[in-house]
Length: 200
Image (cartoon, rainbow, N blue to C red; front, side, top):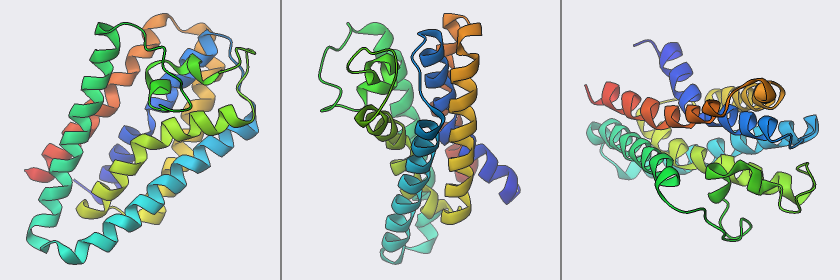
């Protein structure tokens, strides 16, 4: 697989959850201004970039023979975790925990980012949503360094992809059925596929 195709597949896996979350916000008529979308996309890109450099810092301590395989296995584990989270949210009662203390809750219940129930995500709530979405990119950043993706180029693509997917999801969410939320299953599936390709 060519490096360009591989990078696009990797970026899609990391960023596509933004579209599903955007759709939910759009369907629930919860507003998010353009500067907020830009900030969240930037936050995701920076999160990936910093975690990639952490991965590169660790590379000298890992044998080159095993680094690629270790990164692939890590991606498969992250993908399995994403799938577990997806199916778990449908099998358990609603979590009424405080989203400020557990940002990952926002991934399962995007409307919880509107903490004050004002019908819009503003101020600190933008930070909350940005933190929740960047959680996906942190583990993927370390793994990406091990499998050889470019930190800067990939983080730039993640910024662009997150912006476009979140913006498109919010704008088009009102036109989608509730089934649009099921797109959240794709990141886990794609990361598992990427990991298996690298292991092959």
